[in-house]
Image (cartoon, rainbow, N blue to C red; front, side, top):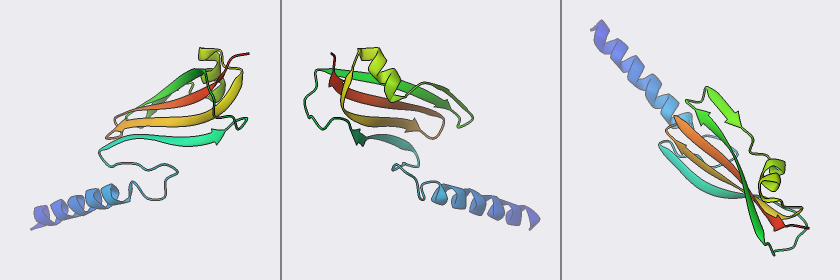
Amino acid sequence: MKLKFKALIVALSLASIALTTGCATAIPLGLVNTMITTPVTVGNGEIRFERTGEASCYSLLGLFAWGDSSINAACKNSNIHRVGWVSTRVNNFLGIYGVYTTLVYGQAE
């Protein structure tokens, strides 16, 4: 009887964690897999661009994170001096491994 009760408690705990992981986040998150691109901001308002810059950071097990996904890093990687707009791409699988990429669209001077 005690083993069944403990198993029920563990199952309910895991179910409650799984059901509440996506609540109130800034970006939509999938429980198993997330592959989205979202807008961030518009720079000078021009919709033209001649270059695209990317900068990424990474997450492992939700415990370790590294990299530079800043707008400055994305501009530097593609020699962009005039930003048209910025987007973010998120790829995350089960919270085990995640790649967060900043995409900058702009022009060189």
